[in-house]
Image (cartoon, rainbow, N blue to C red; front, side):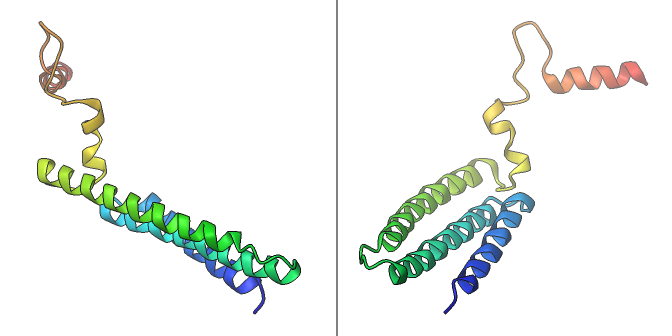
Amino acid sequence: MHLAYPAVLSALLFCTGLYGVLARRNAILVLMSVELMLNAVNLNLVAFDVWLSRTAEETLHSGQALTLFTIAIAAAEIGIGLAIVLAVYRNRGTSDIDKLRDTAEGHESEAPAGEAPVDEQADEKAEATA
């Protein structure tokens, strides 16, 4: 088999995963897209390992060893990522990434001492402009 076939398939898988990461809003689908991208990398590693082992007389198979390492890391990553997504879903009630942005920024209703909360400030500005 030519090297071009798995390389093209790997590029298509990687582009599909990249589109999924950039276009999806659901955290589970983003994690699945990341896994698709990792599988594209694994396919490349194995394909180039086989191709290089034909040209060289060494039988080290470092590409296959790296693939096994990548699979182990991906399994741990998806386990931890899924646990985080489930915990966030239980607390927030959604796994939509756009709605979870305020998690890192803090709650919007908290304001410094002596000032009105952010939502009330926005309401006051809207009434002032009306």
